[in-house]
Length: 422
Image (tube, rainbow, N blue to C red):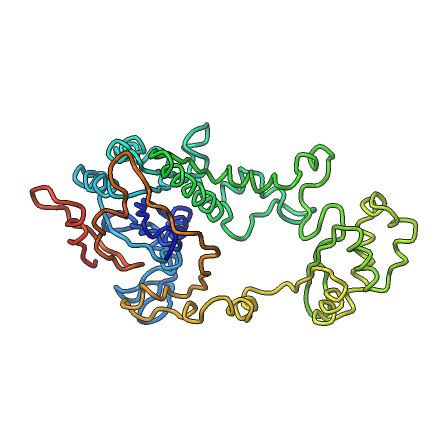
């Protein structure tokens, strides 16, 4: 039993942050239905490379081809298209929201409200709804209306200023850290809101911003003291005040973590250089910090004589945390990665029929933790999602549309029954 299998999520999300949140909740068992624009869908659908019956190509080769980015970001997520700017589309969305536990969106701040689908609008028909918005700068404040992707948030947050070589320019972190960590913060906030609803019947509105996320990450380090003391904020691959860092060996690079005086003693002992601590420039922590470049040079001169295999064995024998710096290709081929991921999860989908089980070209991790089953949620707006008629099963990672009804009122189950492939 998956912990969120009785939870329904309605997702109006694009690009990365919102879809990653959708996928995260789906991995825990939630039924997630993503609502996309008619005719085009999520803009990322038009971004290559594309995968289909003829393999992976920079441009679409067949009508069955799908963006690899969409496949990576859609695991377990169902998808429909709906014109939310049309009155009938709005009514259909609210009908879906009545039978949902969670609504998530990452459109520009205020977009959902302008369409009459903001938190207040949804709460009016489902008071127990948990409604989460993700944006670059948040729903309030002087920057809320600025266009923002991960690049801009990394720049504005200051995290680029602390990343990169000490004598080099500010450097962007190589992955979309704001786009990826903010949804994780949002996911556990949603779980907390669902737990609150179990106890009180009350829904909540959650405002998650990428810039807030990066601020919390940066200041887990004592950056205020670094700034106060005038220390350089950028240290590259090294520590600001100890010999932790990157070292070049005969056939590659390794990175070590030292930090503690006992560990430094063990490191120098393994390298046959214990005498460096006996007096002079390296005898005390204060002296070592003042002469950190010289101490690193001493370690480099000794460690650099070894191959990576020899150096790692030597340092591991001394209890020093050490790892070879691998290329992405090496990491992907490593049994320590593939050993934790079933081999079929690396297999590229070869046809439309296999999409639901095998997203193309993905090394996808399993859910990292499991919780006990979620207690049936209470809502002052009516029965819980787990007691309602299930939506018809929709195939994951495909592209579908809901045809608006032609006259007469229909329940959402009927809307979803009219789904057809594009």
